[in-house]
Structures are given as C-alpha cells and as structure tokens.
Amino acid sequence: MLHPHWSGRRAFTLIELLVVIAIIAILIGLLIPAVQKVRESAARAKCANHMKHLALACHVHHDAVGRLPPAVMLAGITDPSGPQPADITSSYRTPGFGPNWAVMLLPYIEQGPLFDQVSGDVTAFVSSNGTNQNWRKIRGTTIPVLLCGSDDGGRTPFALNGGGWARGNYAANAGPGWFNWTAMGQSKDGGSGGGAFTNDVGGMFGMNWGAKIPADVPDGTSTTIMLNEVRIGLTENDRRGVWAMGLAGSSVTAAHSIGDATLPNDDGDKSDDIENCTDVKNAFAGVSIAQRDRMGCSEDNAPNNWPNWQAQARSRHPGGLQAAMADGSVRFIQNAVTQDAWRRANSRNDGQTYSVD
Image (cartoon, rainbow, N blue to C red; front, side, top):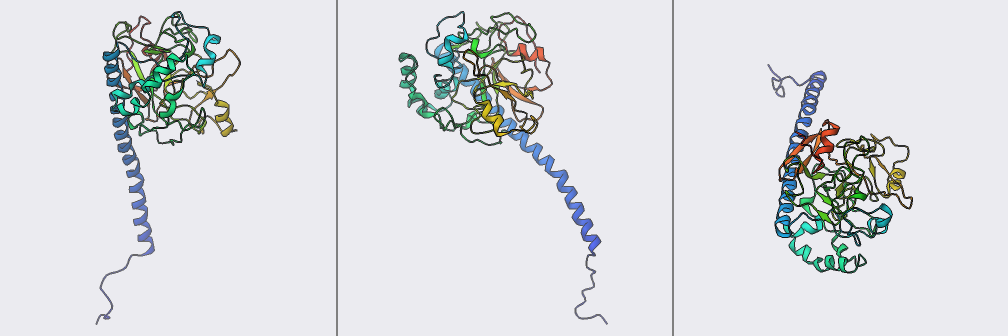
C-alpha cells in the first residue's frame, strides 16, 4: 500500500537539476548574440533612415538656396584661393565659429520652429563679423534624427564653449584635405600622406561654402560621399559628436586617408586632431587605445597649428559605417575598404570614380 503522501513521481536529483540549468545557460548564451544581432540590425536600419532623411534635407536646401549649406560659417573668409592657417585661427578655433550645416538644415528636418528662434541670429553673426553668437542658444536641443541608436556609449552634453552642447552622429564631408584649408570648397594639402591629389581637391562642404550639385561634383553624385557618421566623444570634454558645432570631429569629417587617419573607424592613437584631446587622454591616462574604444586623438595648440583639422568617420556598426552619397543614396562602407577608394570617395573632383561598395 502506498503512503498517502507518495505521489508516485520521483523528484529531480541534484545532478539532473544541474544538467537542466547548464542546458538553459547554453541556450541563453546562444540566444543573446542572436538578439543583439537583430537589435543592431534594427538600429542600423533606423540610422540609415536618419541619414537618408538628412541627405534629402540637403537636397531640399540645395533646391531652395542653390547650393548645399556650409560645413561651418566663419567671419572674414572670402578668398576663394584659401587662407593661410594664421589668417583664420581666431575665427575657426573656438569660440569664434558660427552656425554649421546642421543648423542651416533645421527647417528641412521638421525643426522649423527651432530654426525660427535663431534665424535672425544667423544673419546677425554675418553682419557682426562673427561677434554675435546668439545662435548658440539652441545648442542644447537634442534632435532625434541627428542621433544614431547604435552609438549608445553615452550622450552627456559637451561641457566646454559654454557647455550644454547636445550630441549628434552625422557629419558633413569636407574632403580629403585638412579642414583648415577648406574655405570656399578648396581642400589644399589633399595630397599629404601619399601624394594622390592636387591641391584643389575638395569635399561636398567647406568653410562658408557648400557644393552645387551636380556642377561641383564632376566625379559623379553616386560615388561621392556627402555625409558620414561620427561617434560621440568619450568624455564631457570630448568635442566629437556635437551636432551644432561645425568643427572636425564634432559634425565634420576631413583629412580622410592622409597623415595618421587612414580608413573608416581608424584606430590609430592620434587619428583625430581636435581641441581638448589632452583632457580626453588625461581621463584615460595609462589606458590603451583599445580600452579607449579605439577613439584616438591628438592636439597641437601652437599659434599657427590647427587642433580641429582632421577627424575620421566612425560608427559602432560592426564592420563599417554608413554614408550618404551626393545623389541621396545611403551605403554601408566596410572598414576594409581600400585606402585609395576611401580617399577618392570623399573627394568630389579628383578626376577618378571609385566604388566603395
């Protein structure tokens, strides 16, 4: 006769329980990467949509104004031959820079009321020869279409130059030459680090200058990059990834494949030349470039040198980044793209057509 409390079923042994737990752990281990992959794929698609939206806004601005907006507005630059660095050090270096391409696109990305707050101040910046900086009052506004969800490393506002600068992940392509030479679309020193270019090779955006499409893009709109992705800085004093700041690394990419910035997501220790890099490196003293998320930088504040003249395109997408071409299409560019193809894709007028697919 069975005991009244005996159910007729045997309980799990400890070994059986451990086996079940181990199987569940294995399944979870297999599932997590798949979930992460799906999540990144969705984020990447959303980022591509944002970039597509921005590329369309560039073209609508072009239709309205006759050319793309400038990478950054500076006072006193009117010489198409391109100024010497010393000529515009005071206006390009912080705090003298003016509104950038993203500010000028606000009416075309469903941010008309925000632009209305500063439209008069943009005009005043020019008429005051750069002394009126009231346009900066919108710098703290977070704009979703200017952010890529894949870059979730933190969005602490940039703390310098008045502080409170909201972050962003998209940048105007200023071409293969140093950004200090991109006045009026020129990109001098474009042949550095390989000598592939003559001095007048440029990107789609410059200081006080934006390209006319297709007149200024003889290499072809489907093979010339208009917008790149950038990463948000590692600290609150890291000015990379700031949507309203028209500096290299903030919302501009420049000096592609020359010097010590050779390819997308370049992991060189000095690949981005930016102001306040010393602050960033001090925050990571003794830490390797890999531990710094492969976000290298350097800084040279000598009187005639340019700490904001070089910055590489970057993203957190595995294997590469997304770019909007001058025809408005969006492409994924592998980190393994050849240096020559990458350099030429960021030039609008080098006389060569290279595919980055």
